[in-house]
Image 1 (cartoon, rainbow, N blue to C red):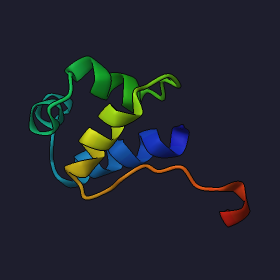
Image 2: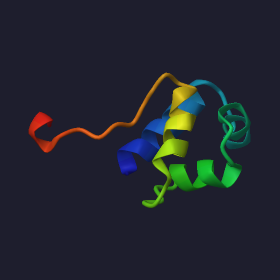
Image 3: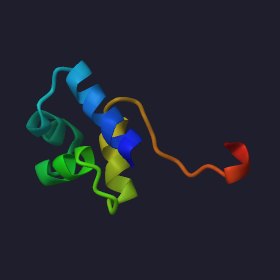
Image 4: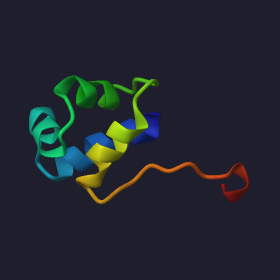
Amino acid sequence: MKNLSATVKMLRKQYNLTQEELSLKSGVGLRFVRDLEQGKVTLRLDKVNQLLDLFSYEMVAVSKSDT
């Protein structure tokens, strides 16, 4: 989860967005953005992907044999 949190925060800063702006542009709540960046371990995957879509990213399940 730390990698996801760090990636989202890095992308947000790279695009010069505040957490509030990211929330508005991606259509998720501000609290969700804050929870995600703080590494909350129980988040809805559909909302994670909704936010990541803004940056042309997607979170998917990968077989352990593929890693």
